[in-house]
Length: 313
Image 1 (cartoon, helix red, strand yellow):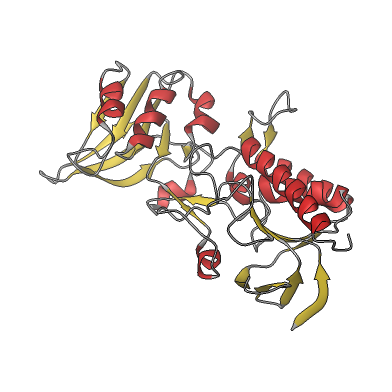
Image 2: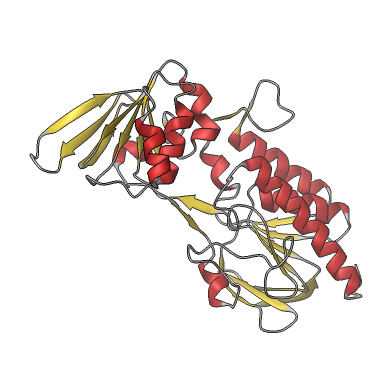
């Protein structure tokens, strides 16, 4: 069923980018509709303590931060729907956004669907996410002072994360499934020259050990088949991210070779009236604060766009 009311803006996604966009759009009296997904809040809902978001002296729990942002957006007039977007039609105005429960119309759209870290799918990995298993060294490295950790991956991101973690951890293992690394020579050499980093190559990761916290990494040598355990207290995944952009690419939104949405200028996509914010556009920083900043930018760009289009706002 199509909701005949044409919204000024629909924001797809409810992480820091989407909710910040909703706050700014609400304050501009655009009455934004946020289609939040069935699991609102984005990646921070799987994060325990967030210590690098400005304004929280003693840190804040990820779910609490997102709940506060959601309530703040609603205070300024945003409507938040816990529905999943199944398809979009950007071929004509008004734009059409279809969920499992209905179809919504809008004069502009902000895509803020984020990117999901790639995981190995191991039982212990899933059980211990936020309890010693992470996909963001910049976010969580501080919590591993004086500990031993592993970074799983073989590309530039793995080398960068491992080097960063040596600021805190006593020992960092780079664990890779192949004998050769795909990282650039300069990044690989930098990691090899770091005395705190050891390489464990050509192994399969079988599981992350521990019940309530990480106690070790179970691995198997790909040549000998011998299984062993690396005793450690933290595991960081660095095997890439997948941006949640597929349905938008199908609708004509330009993406790069890795699937991230491109911008023409500021937060504008190649489709007039469609904007983007957060990790679905950002393969580099992937921080809550940068996503929030982009959400602010997108809302301001939407406000200007609508005014220029002489829509009634």
